Length: 297
Ligand code: ADP
Figure 1 (cartoon, protein in one colour):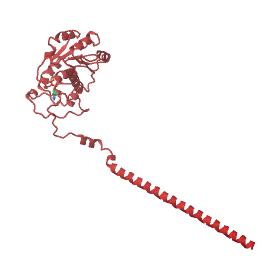
Figure 2 (cartoon, rainbow, N blue to C red):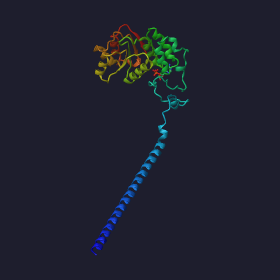
Figure 3 (tube, helix red, strand yellow):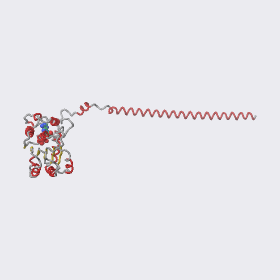
Figure 4 (cartoon, rainbow, N blue to C red):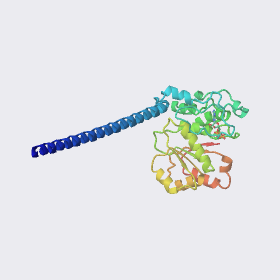
């Protein structure tokens, strides 16, 4: 009897163990299923992310195209063929892009600039580098005032010239100055007097534009700007000095601007410069110069 009881207990224990094992197995299977579901979810998320990235890349594709080559770029940047400058265009050519001539001025011209003798800039036997600067500034032929004055100034004669605004007077005296000055000589060789700071800056720009292949050091000095800066600048080479009479006289009197090699003097708007306000200053300034070739414009 006791034996039967023992056997029944043993069977019950075995059954309990089997049930416990089965429960454990089910739990493990459930955990595995949950893990698989999680992995699937992660994979789906990954795929979605990849798809989104591909779509974004597809949208950005046009911007990623390689940049067009130089020729294509130039074609895109070309101005329209019939480009006409606005009537209010500033009188200077502004320095422009590296070697591109400014757009052709198609406005009707008056005989102040058309009544030429038909001379060419090449007729004056100018330095090649100067001719390059002239043509790159968009000048094709000398204007009447330039035709009249350039050959005389090149011959070293004094000139008093008069012409309307916008007829090319600035280049009429700048071209001979650039031709006759020598950039290999470290000295002030020409002085260009103007009545205002604006005109000084404008004239300096013309000198730089037309003389851009000549290597001249052009300095502008006018009243109202720092004298100390001008003095420091004059410790370095200056070939062409452009400024208002009072300031240039100040620099000459202080011995900072050495005028002993300055054989050319130009006066732009000479009527103003020879007014009682300026005339005494100019006479003192001229006294600092050696024998002079003068161009009064
Ligand atoms: P002015 O001093 O007589 O008022 P500018 O020297 O300022 O005239 O010249 C007026 C404009 O004519 C400027 O834009 C200048 O670049 C241009 N210019 C000067 N000479 C010539 C030329 N020979 N051919 C074409 N344009 C010129």
